[in-house]
Length: 545
Image (cartoon, rainbow, N blue to C red):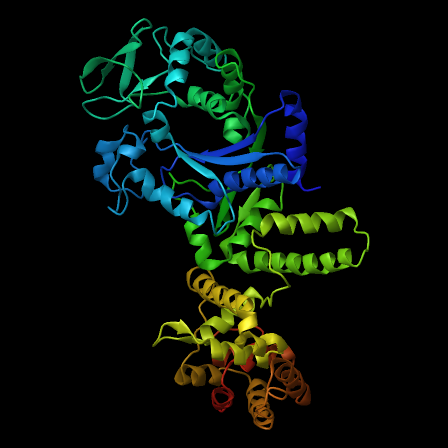
């Protein structure tokens, strides 16, 4: 059973006595920087559980709370120095760094929200600033102020040094400087529902701390929102779920102050971004990020779902952009198995648990399941084809050239891509080609054919045996027919080996010689497929050295 379904069953079992009308799953993020793939793990984990609940036949809802009312904590590496004046102000009240959005928070939040549809995530978005300004937290603020001794007692149990006796569980946004991290509540009048506060900027006042004037600190805000939204489960990073973390204090505050049972604890591990030989935890503040908005530039959204949902949330993931083609291969393999297993199931054959799990994983990863097995051209091959078929004058990939290349590489379905009934396959292939090309340019290797002069220089450095092979291979290549049955990847592959065998040359020496005169390297893509993708006249001319 997939972990999302198992978690959903567990939640229902624990909550069924309460007979909830709706099972609400929450996730969220503070949009202080680029929302990256590591952040997406929380939202996709929540989405997996949400879909697991729906499978069980209960009413469920998925929400996302953007903590955009949190203060800017420092001038991050990606910000100009002048943002120092905004440190301490709520993110929603700070101007956009590039002037393209309504606020600093929206600048980082909007691209993520816009990606949700592509990712197949259907949720309701709430913004903390609106929640506070619309009065959603007003009662929770009064409750926290009235029970501040209980809250302080809970927090002090997990602190080395107790909070000051005059501490209040509330931050006020200064009316003069607009900051909330530099203010201090010095008195609360329960009869008038007002607080006295002072700010480091020198401003003092007595205000009603409602409708956005005041904000609960995180360790109080979190349990308050559980009660406000009636949350039954919420994924959390391991820092929040650690012993003495905000979940442990949140449970007690939720029960003792807000009279609400805390949601199910679901901890997810960090995703580390592989940079060179090091794997570093993704962090917006440190600049170690790969933004969700950038994923769709290099790969299909369902592959990101696959990457994050195939493992339990507690399993550590190292994300290496250079190995993306392998992840796509794994997804394509799952997709092929899915359609095979569905056919087997449709024929009345019994599936084992492992086969059922594969079907379920594919369903969770693929928001829009196609009617039939798509034509999946391997991502690694798309990296090559896209660059060969790219027309720099029009800045587009020539799809007619792509289809010709595929036909020469024994993809018999390629000709069918031209017809209307195969538009779905055509569009998916086109998307994959552009993604693969973007990946190659940014994270892989550009396919650059060296000029003839450089090829000649490299040819002169080859062994006599390699030079002899190049001449022989060229002659044999010339004798091949130009039609697809003759000039194709498999035929060229055989010719490489046969020509090498004819002069008793190790095949790897033949491959190395070819790459040197084509790419200026000792390695390259599969040679048979590569040569068949190039114009035959060009290949024959290049081997005439």
